[in-house]
Picture (tube, rainbow, N blue to C red):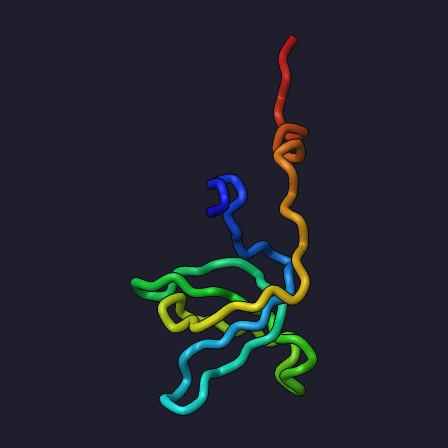
Length: 94
C-alpha cells in the first residue's frame, strides 16, 4: 500500500484517458489534458480539454461528474510543482 505522500492524484497539464458512463452498452471515452476540478450543482466534476482524437471538438472543455468515472488511464503525467515554488512567493522580514 502506498504511503499517504505517494498517493496518486490527477495533476493539471497531464494527459489522461477517462472512461465514464454514457449508456448501458458503451462507455464514453475522453482523451485530453486535465485542467482541474469544478463544482456543478452538488457534484464535483473533472474538467478535461479534449485533444485531437476528438476531431472538431479539439480544445473544447468536457465536464465529467466524478461519480460517472469508470476508469482513468495516465497517458502522460506532468510533475507536480514542488513546494519550493510556494516558498519562493513568501515575504521575509529581517
